[in-house]
Image (tube, rainbow, N blue to C red; front, side, top):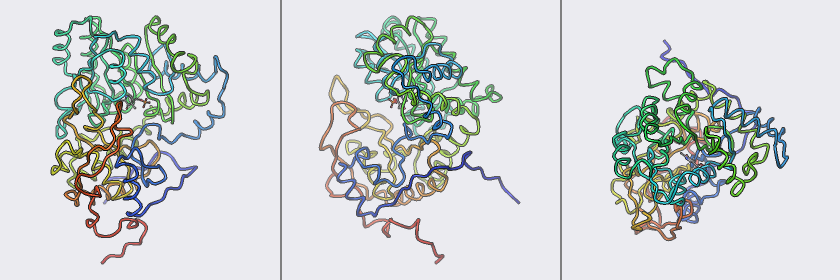
Length: 485
Ligand SMILES: *Cc1c(COP(=O)(O)O)cnc(C)c1O
């Protein structure tokens, strides 16, 4: 009797890019040369690359065909009008300002809305978003619900805004010092956790009654819409496209990194409702990005994003995308690895503070775990903990967020379930050897967004992972035919 039917990726492969496994000795050398920072490893030395889902998407044959239709005119490229129409149709924002990627839009939004001394609430910080708010003279305030900071809480909408925290901030500083709230759909640093429509509705009502704008970080809003369809009972019968539109309708605008949801390798946009704000944004985009009809992108990039936006809301696609993340997460959960629950939309987040409980927080357990995972299996992941959180701009002290995570981020349409099995095996092997992982300390610390270029060394050891551990050299169990012994 069949328990359940298998599902498979809703695409077949037309072009392949070979990848290869390295030996453990090679990986030990590569991670040392990279200063124990996975951002500094060469891509060709990585076997399975789960650093990020940003710009790592595989494009469809239709998108590649669209690339050939690039209209590279300096002004008024036809691809801009295609993108404008796609954003209007799918997200519903009439004013579209293209940017080279998400942070270009964040820069412009921060500059047109934030005055020095302003306060910007948000459902957990994001690195580039908060930095642009601070560079514009604003102060970020986290108003996400408490459950978001608890890796074990199974709240279905851990991305929700806590209205009481928002109200406390607004009462303290005054609504006139709060130009907007930034609501991220889904919340990346909370583990890819969604926001409910009901919560967004409440935020919208609260803010609009006080003259505060609601701006979305729509980077993964399609993935958010899928969770809403699965988890919010009154939304069950709606399509992902309808839910996405409904959520955007509850906002005044959005910044977007097309490198995530929109299935492209580069691109972003700022979408707005108010034409006068659109005017101010267009005045600035020419300073930082390029003319308002290309925003730092080639015509072909605009076209690929316009097509990717429409593909991203196909139900088959989004189900398999999040299903693949779930497939990996379930294997880790069943193996006892502490992960953030519920499993999020774009990544599986390992609770590094729990897994490496022998390491103090100032030895950066998540950074150490990401480095050790590369040594163990050639899998590249990313730290999302104290290194990413940086230092407090006022006190200069390290920020120690409650979540100290390693993110296994799944690129869209790139890897198969077999790749996910290999990743799960590597993490489980490392879990068995977790007490052999050493902590790290800085040898070089950049001033801004330090996680990108920082360098480290193991504390009291030459290696981040004692090699005596897992037994066999790991170069090959996947290639050797296994015999049952
Ligand atoms: C990636 C990301 C951004 C910034 O976008 P870029 O395209 O990398 O500049 C902003 N917000 C969130 C939630 C992101 O994940």
